[in-house]
Image (cartoon, rainbow, N blue to C red; front, top):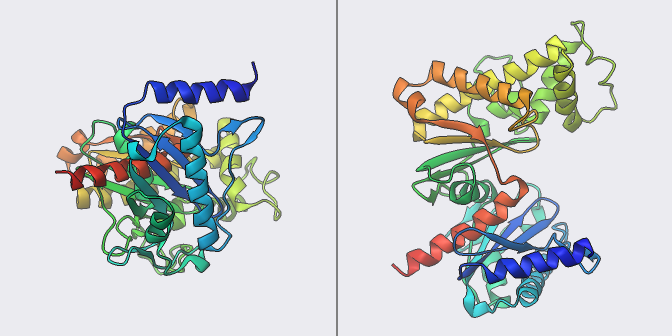
Length: 359
């Protein structure tokens, strides 16, 4: 039996065992869109990235004009529901995770940094015209955080902050089941917490000095690595050349640290210390019961000896800096849902909206 047939049967069995109503989560990234169908208890049924009939189901690129992309999203949702045999009357709504600030009164996107042509686009209204379902939107980082809160590593916790460590640092915050978006969607920009106020602090990608992202994003780690390896004996030097992409440098640091390189290990442990400084400010502000790390730069992540050491170092540094009562209460861990967190959380927030309308 082919893998495509196995996947299709798995999706159909998932529908059979699912708990309706169903919710649709749409994770809009800087280059592509991931769509998933989720049931009322957070089980993921199927996505547009599953392979069926020997080919990827639907690939939606966000470099298209927004009206074209939204039409493609609506078509993909329709096809997903038909393939699964789910009627729209059994769907409670659609949640969009968007990489942009938001105008909640007009339901328009404000200024998506990676999607400039989408500025001031009425995304919820336009998708709602094509599909007769309630449509809500939220910041993409908060969508991912809600996914972890609902059915991921923070399940059962009262509140959390999810820090996504990648090219930058995205942060999603959930307090008592509510997404902390803020007035225009900047409620979780914790990558811009100041951890170094000195005049010579490193520059962040936003152009300001001393932000957490300047030190702990993949870009920040790459810059710190390049500046330090020039003056130290290290196995990093022959591995990192002027042609090496910044995004690849943290991986090289990880592998060399695993191999026993002292500088590589120092860079990882310093990253843990800088993260802990930022998390201390965050915990003293929102008193979250859970802090999670996700993204591409977790130095091996859960189950990896180096990833676990990184996590232990962050935890130890946080415990040394926060109020004792906070240290005793907070769980610090890795996220569990990976790239599925965004669409699962967006669907979960659509569910939360639907339930609030019926109260």
